Image (cartoon, rainbow, N blue to C red):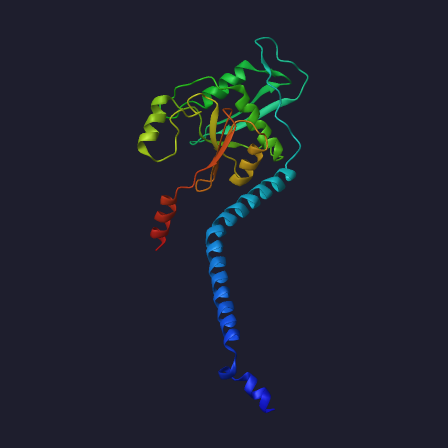
Length: 250
């Protein structure tokens, strides 16, 4: 019993054993410090990777829920008789102020010139009423996007269609939007839009699934941008607006 008591006493621990214990404790502290540094350095990167992974997983899952509808091939614009056979492509658009258009712009592989003219006039610059002929593929993109969501008969609320360079420059100077210097709106192949009853994020995912043109997502305004320009995507959520809203609530 006496021997056991003496072995527990720190006073009789051999010098070499005490030194080993101190070295072990110091090494453990160093390892803990290194682990903490690695966690601080790698943590944000891992979080960003996880966020990107979950985003792509969400998009992949959403695309599985979309109808198996593909963007049609570019048709021909014919001044002759409109074919009676073939699928009919219809669009219903609405503008602020109650202006509405409901038109069949394509039958089969043939675009209807009169319908294209009506759609281009409807999408005129809202600041000066200037009209520019739209790229017909823009209408195919809109029609197919709704078909993906099984909402072909829904009305598209147009926030912005064609913009002259003067209008676009004025918007850029006002800094109220993120209008690009060489905006696709100037080329008459872009729209900013909403569809009542469909969340903007679902519209974005349907547009992205087409792999055609640009798709912009605006969560604050709950609308999207689509165009037939180069393939790209972006999200515009200015922090300034979020901070201003929080200050207002306070």
